[in-house]
Image (cartoon, rainbow, N blue to C red; front, side, top):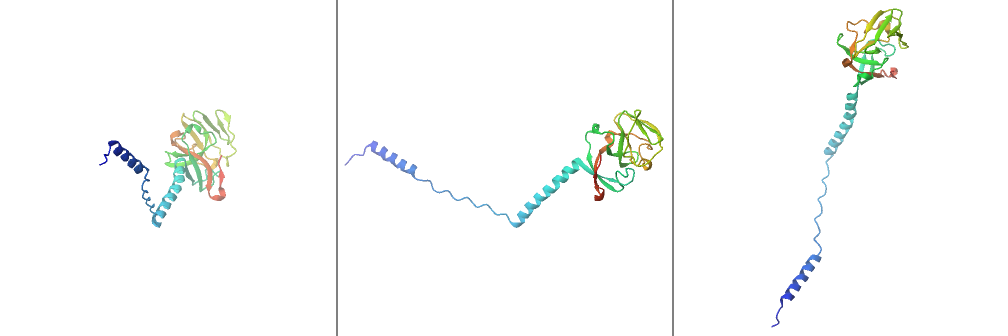
Length: 206
């Protein structure tokens, strides 16, 4: 009987192993098809997207802006009675300049007002009774004033406070007549930018 050597057994095993390695792997099972959304699910997704893009601009608007209603003629004709005014919130009150139209809270009257700022912190305001106004002794040019007033008075504005009056000087109940004529910077809400409604009165405010 022919003797089978150990070397031959090892050689046969190696050949078998090589053939096994060369054998291609079985095909992987196909991936499961992605489940299709139902019409209801599609509509819900579209609704969520629509709500997001509707409320995002609204949220941004409410953070930086608001609408102010003008119920009286104290700022007429610059701002007609019944106007809706686009107002931007003032986060830095140091940016207020003379001539700005400002929306602010009146603790004395317990209402929100819109008037023009003519006096800044630390200044003096003098009404000479002829319709002219002087700031720290210098005459103030006011092309926006629409009516005459013979009011006479002198005011010294404290620091961090402002002095507001209406453009319709002869028909405005403003700082000249308040018991507390000076508005603290913390009471200021924003700066009027444009008349939005009525549409016929639309214009940018200086």
